[in-house]
Image (tube, rainbow over all chains, first blue to last red; front, top):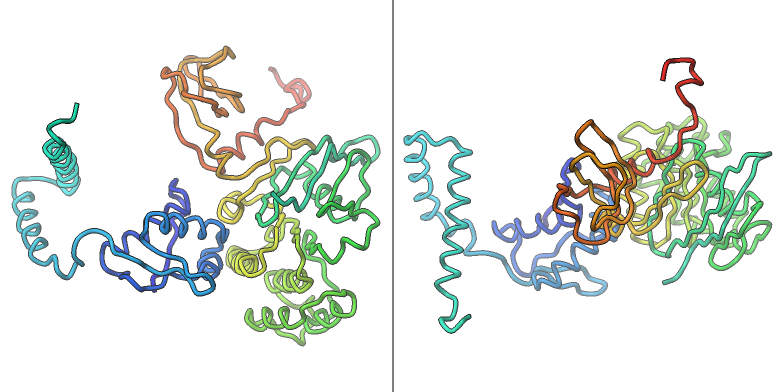
Length: 138
Length: 295
């Protein structure tokens, strides 16, 4: 079972914050298929938020096919998100640590690293999208 | 859409002064409705009209389709916690639960006892000797024991410390999930309203300035920053709620109805931004000359 937290200063909508936390938990393997999400009542009570907000978040996750509601029982995880769980990513992580060492040696600050990762990620994804587009398109 | 509370051109006058005027609202069932406005805006008057404690001087109010004034038939449908949670201070919480059973046809004493036990409220102490937070919890438990279809709360957390306030809102949200009760809640605490309410009514100077579903209201408004604006229409902007100007720039809170003129930088707003915009919009009648200072 996971526990939600709210960032009251965030401009991100409360229900979006709940969705993001479920997705994050799915990505890092904290939630796996079959797991139950906290009951709507418990979330509404512990965070002192409107129960409709929780329902909206769960409904949205259901539409995305990530969870399913079983009437009278609760809401359960159907599938996971992203790649293999973090435990299986040790090798990638080790590569990344080594790369970060080189980045620091080259004088990059953490902000520089994040900016570089983001721009590279965007550029690579864009290039891949072009490559995988059917030749007949357009 | 089922309607819990409906008012039409509702008005209430104290002497010559209208405390509430031209108030037309429809509050759907199953919502948690926030009622916000400065002191003296008419919030308590509206709540008292809704529960039948006041007789309208104009227009109509209907609670689940019936007029509440002088109508005992609506009483079982209403739970009302008035400002400062008035209770008989010499009675213990256990006695108040018992008293409620004598005075109400529908009364879930077991529910009240269960709630109060969970909260650790001492049953045998006069409620006058409980803390403010505990008294508020007792008042809420009593109101919920009626199993009302509409629960009205007049600034229930205004006098509570931050911890008691959070605990009160937690029990309110938990119990509303269980019962599906429609809630109408007045408060000055915008951050609390933002968390708890999915519907909003803004009162100012005895009139309704804004009413609707929170998501729709937030979606419909933007903050615009652009060149100095002198009231000419802007593409994509329905109404300007509030405008602030410097010599070369204007900042507007606006209700938008399309794609906004690209000359303006458009920012999303929070519920708090919207509420503050509408509250600041109320007319001010005191001028600098009233204070005998240079204009």
